Image 1 (cartoon, helix red, strand yellow):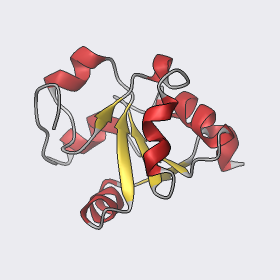
Image 2 (cartoon, helix red, strand yellow):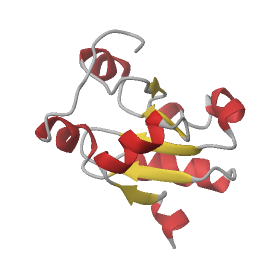
Image 3 (cartoon, rainbow, N blue to C red):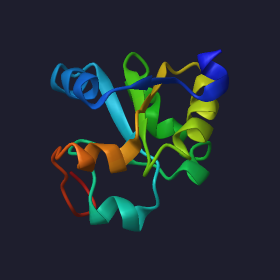
Length: 113
């Protein structure tokens, strides 16, 4: 059932724990300009429309959870379906970047974090 929706939702607090313990890779599926304007530290930018063509970039992270983030949750499910179909264990950040920022969680700017 969760695969059909592109992964289970995950709270910001759980994401922080997973990232701090190196158990997850965070993939920001927003457009490059949105990512550069502000993203979660450690996130890799793979826009949702390019998920299939850039999936090979995630192969080295096969053993980790893949946590997807977008602005409000509208595109993470689409990317999650593609990744789940290829065997990745996928989660979606609840509320996306909007909720992350609403909780006053840190963001960084630029091309890479």
